[in-house]
Image 1 (tube, helix red, strand yellow):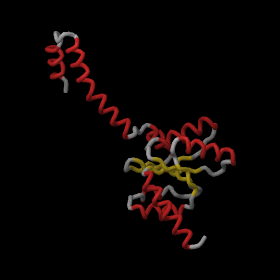
Image 2 (cartoon, one colour):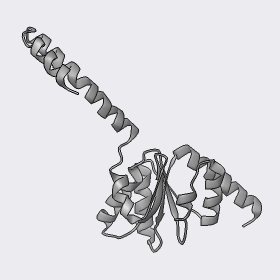
Image 3 (cartoon, helix red, strand yellow):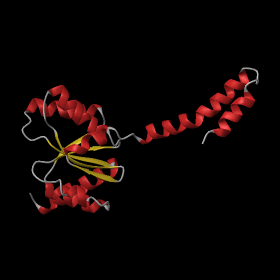
Length: 174
């Protein structure tokens, strides 16, 4: 591969990493054509970009992003495929469900960078599955904020006789 081609690949990878923001490193070596095609299809359905790349080019692209991927770079050994997403837990869910559906032990999870944190090793996959997206967190906050207001509205609709008791209860809550 010529130096110019390598530079173009590195620049392209750098832009993709910046665009998606969430990067997972996995090993899909040993997959046959059908398994690889099935994985790519699942990635497409979930808006996850799957790229197979040389580790040296990936590391150079990571360095060009300006994001500290130094911990994640340690996982870029052997056969590496990258899964890129805008949702922190989407690739983790994909890996877990794909393994179960295909009855496989792969893709092997090597590491991830999600929500400004690095996760290394297979034992971190479950933690990533349980990460809530930004939209889910906003929904949780909104439902917490709406609950007292809904209680107040219910009291007002019932004729207001319970308002004093409701206000007393709400003021005692932390």
